[in-house]
Length: 280
Length: 267
Image 1 (cartoon, rainbow over the protein chains, first blue to last red):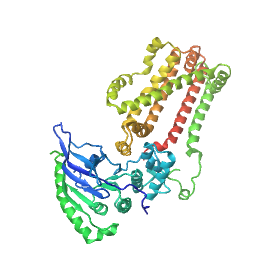
Image 2: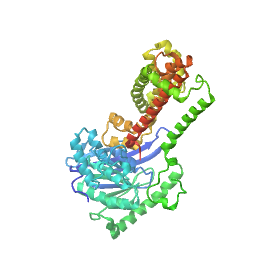
Image 3: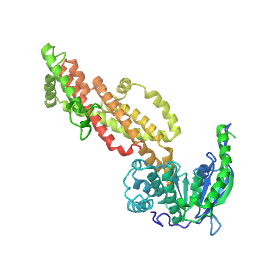
Image 4: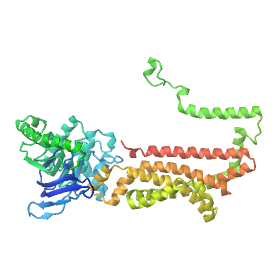
């Protein structure tokens, strides 16, 4: 079980606005790749926004722009404080990665406490906080194991704990369950769903999975094949907590069909683009 | 156990037999060779100037340790090897990280490494003697030169093979450029750096002993050369035994350190 309130204590109050964001890779070469084109999108604070689209549509790129690891070649990114309407600096963010990206030479607790150590927190405090986060992802008792001694699902729970322990205002989930088998995925989706609900954090979820998007998100942003643009924004009004049983609701089915209908064409389009070598 | 072992023996702890024990096989065959050597030398009556018997060598070895100052020679050789080598470890690892993380430094260093690395370092002995004489600085330099290249090259390799995902994860958690180097790149390169250290120490040993043979008055290499000059064949063998033992100790110590570094080995 997920301990409520273990994750984030901040009240999220910063919205992220993408304004006509475009990104072109290799602009000065003969074969520029337009990854993103004219993306308008608003990430509401305290909500989970899912970015879904065919592979190569630039959804992970959009996440990297939000994180500040990539700069858009066009348009801008704004962080807006809800109460005042003022533009502010980048809020605290932490990422959960598809490939886990755990440090293999560090134990579970050292991995989880890594960010706190970088920030210069004293050992006692960072270990106490890391223990709480490890407990929140059901890994108590595994503190001194190394990542290679854990299953894929457990590794990703370490990855989630490592992000949550930083108490981010915005949680970035980059295909967090993409490397896991179907059963593990179901369980972790439910866990993460509860974790995000109880913590009330803002989250951006990049995923290939329609099911994952519906189970976790408040809003689903469907993206087109490259160059990535936004095809539709869909609000998910299914009641929470959502579990695997939610997938049997008629509303779930309708939503799934609607998104699949949109994605199908885009995936076909993406396959054509990829077979052309990705050129415009 | 052999695959053909009887069905009953498949269950329960395997039965110990001497010809399945790696230690018995290893040490036993060494002992056998020595025994054959001893017996053959006695029977054939070959001159000890040409091939002394193992027992004569052992006597010479003990004598050299007690009165001949062999322990002093060993001390000098070890000091020369490890002083230059220790310096090479520190400089090599730092230089390696620098080369790996800066493309400018890499471009510059690439040329020098390409020129100097394939050069047999013994060929530098005449030049180094002209510049440094035959004393301490010369010996430290030759040991340093032997070890530094494998250490630098392996460190560069290790750092550059670091999973970019780990660097990204560290940045995401707020790491500065310096923290990324110290807490991600360096630890992830540890196995590779140790592989370089292993190779480097081997080259250092070779070079120091070779240099001692050419210019030294003290040290195992010098002792080896002088003993050969005056046809003290037992003493030549005795020095070789000391060098071989040194090799075993160094290798086993490194094996042990490698085991201790298990946490750095990936998945």
